[in-house]
Image (cartoon, rainbow, N blue to C red; front, side, top):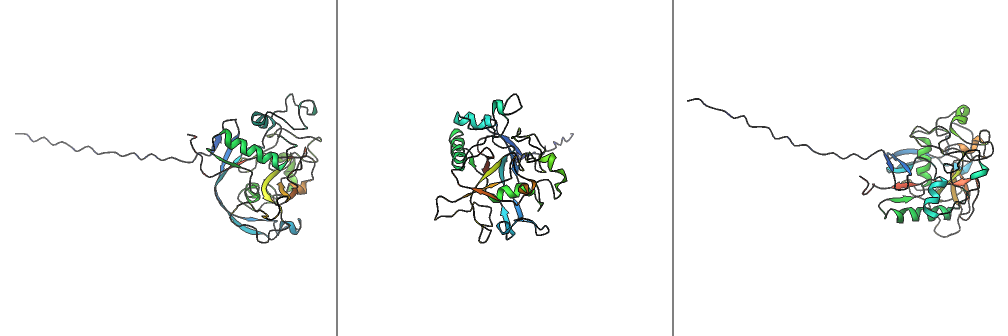
Length: 269
């Protein structure tokens, strides 16, 4: 009698691994990039004799991972939600055939916050849209380092990266007119200033070290931070640590905004 031996088949278990996507496009076509959290030095680089006390003291900040819009909010995107376009540089005021890819401007901080609320309602609060905190913005501008500009330390390459005083022809440009920084983010320098979530303080004494927004709880009319410079500003305003500010009801054709998404994406895959 022959003995037959059956080999026991091995049971293969496949564990499905879900990775966080690195890019995401929302329901109105806004593109976002995933930014890994980390620790960075916020404030002016002490190796350069520039910037005032408003950029000091330099301090370490821990940032949690988040998403940031790849481009400034465009006139087209703003119109999709609000059905208005307050921008000065539109139609016949720009050389391009269409202004839809120019950043929306002439929006106050209140206008930007209203857009954030509309975006959250439109997507059913699946995502936690917000304006960037000042720390989130600078973290992206420094791209994991402590550079003067979003691309490095030397101003020699600014024309390649920024729509500013000497490269703008006195107007805004399309949101991807210049090169992206090392994280793939466009327009962090120049074109239009970007509203941040935070109130403005004259220095970083007692500033949060967890990347959260900093508020003056006693004064509802506080000035709000804006970052990045504009098509009118000199290269010194394009530095990663440079801080501007305006009243929250102030609107100008030099000021726009971009969005972040805090926390994990929900129901997008």
